[in-house]
Length: 267
Figure 1 (cartoon, rainbow, N blue to C red):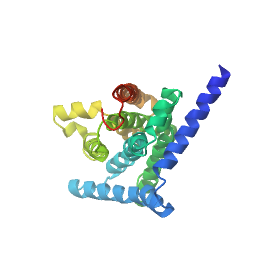
Figure 2 (cartoon, one colour; figure 1 turned 60 degrees about the vertical axis):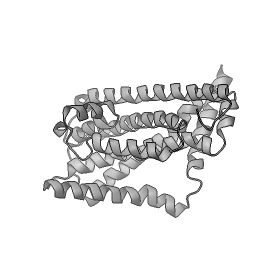
Figure 3 (cartoon, rainbow, N blue to C red; figure 1 turned 90 degrees about the vertical axis):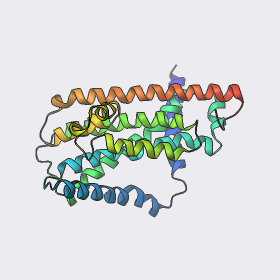
Figure 4 (cartoon, rainbow, N blue to C red; figure 1 turned 180 degrees about the horizontal axis):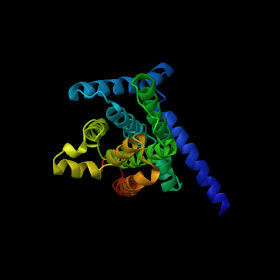
């Protein structure tokens, strides 16, 4: 029992680390820094300036918090999806399916480093907001904000795990990534108040992760306590776990179909 636990923990950590390193193996350090440090800065500046100009608002905290939280989608959607799908394109998927390793450990391990990466991406977004855009956090409960960031990162990563498995069934992975990422940018309320949406758009918004996380973060920045946003975060976490379960189901389904049909190129 103990030996199995140690083996699974080692499998989890090694798989998590190596899949993350493999994903960025083609990047030079300067390119990696540009995509992880300067890219988010340009992204935030664009939407914060555009939002404040379009509405004529002098209070830009709405856009700063929304787009800082949106940062988690970079790792949660693109990173995890490419990490899972990369096994097929790099020719390592047969080894994953052929190994006697615990599938759940392998599957969840793909997201672990990306959750950490996404968390610090959001923190970086808030730092940009504080130092360059005048975000005021004097009324913020930082423990509650840290929890909101973590829950939102996990829930968004759950959707990324589902998309990664669905992407095993298509040749155009980036089309899936881009469609979902920009849909979340629109429907999550990062730049537009969800209350202004028609009913059908609000239904989509609340079926996605990130939406409630952004709402909770905005309330916390305005001075709300953890207890006041706990319901939002609980539902956010539940949605993320549902996406993880669905992703694992499709992962195992794809494995069975690939073995039954004798191909990993298409289902």
